[in-house]
Length: 302
Ligand SMILES: Nc1nc2c(ncn2[C@@H]2O[C@H](COP(=O)(O)OP(=O)(O)OP(=O)(O)O)[C@@H](O)[C@H]2O)c(=O)[nH]1
Ligand SMILES: [Mg+2]
Image (cartoon, rainbow, N blue to C red):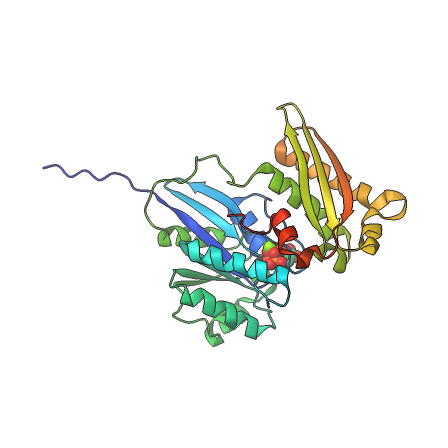
């Protein structure tokens, strides 16, 4: 009898985990050649599990960018931790990203325990090698606790793309066989309005100092796309009046700047003309309120 073998595809979820600022979101953007996950120099930029899909001939990877792993000292931090734990639990493969310059080793080992105890295949990506000599990378790999617990260790640069193709190939090898879960041209299963709110938050992270962005949440109240243009009305929530004042700025200059930059980026993302209206609201202690965290989309987003 003639043997027939159907061509098989690989597909599944890859959770990207690591400490804040390790470069997880830069990496997912580099791997998928998008700018969907927001990036900033500030720690704790990502707040949700953000799905971005990469389809290659014979393989589909659903990357899940997660918030940076850190101590759960506050309610909002606990919510982010739960989001990381849940994503690890549901994933097929873990992509564990480490910045070799990291100082918080205790935290790193805590995350490492979570990763290893999941018993999922793990690829360790040592990121930012554009800032290291080759010898330094070898030293880091050799002296580290990064041993046989990982299925692969790869030095990469999320910024320049160095070794990123090699990384994708290894991840595909570790994925289970199965049909594509999304159509070939899907970039994400998350709604456009989520990315619109993230683009607004990204401008706030880039334009304002440390404290205000961490106390800021963006919600989209209206998102009307009639195929010709898009109307977006959003609220920027802060905890205190003093933060509202900073966000609005002298003569409204700051909120205007945020709106102008965000509108341009949302327009590029949607490829349609956009009208963006932003309002600043004081929602006292929203980072400490489960109801508010839920209302602002930080719970049950998967
Ligand atoms: N030189 C260099 N910088 C990088 C690289 N990858 C990321 N960065 C920078 O590191 C900073 C943090 O990057 P993000 O991608 O936001 O880091 P993250 O891990 O997603 O951070 P959180 O969302 O806060 O957990 C940004 O300033 C990036 O430009 C890299 O390969 N090389
Ligand atoms: Mg991030």
